[in-house]
Image 1 (cartoon, rainbow, N blue to C red):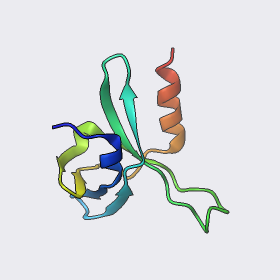
Image 2: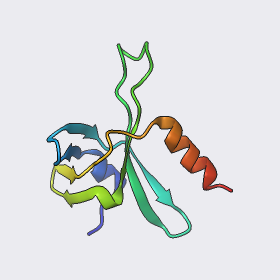
Image 3: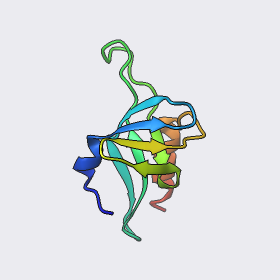
Length: 96
């Protein structure tokens, strides 16, 4: 099944392990050498209208996706959230 990123951005992500509503998909991490989507990214929520920055981004590997429905994406996300620094480090290391 094929989805455009615009279609995925309209879907809410729910962790089936905890029932937590994680947010909506904001971005995707793509491996350009294999042309595959590696993970979905949910940007961290703003703290106090953005004056105190953002919470950490949530990186969801595609292997954690259980099912993609008509309006939600169900995932089994074992780790709470990767830190934004971890995400940046992983993308920087892939350039080498």
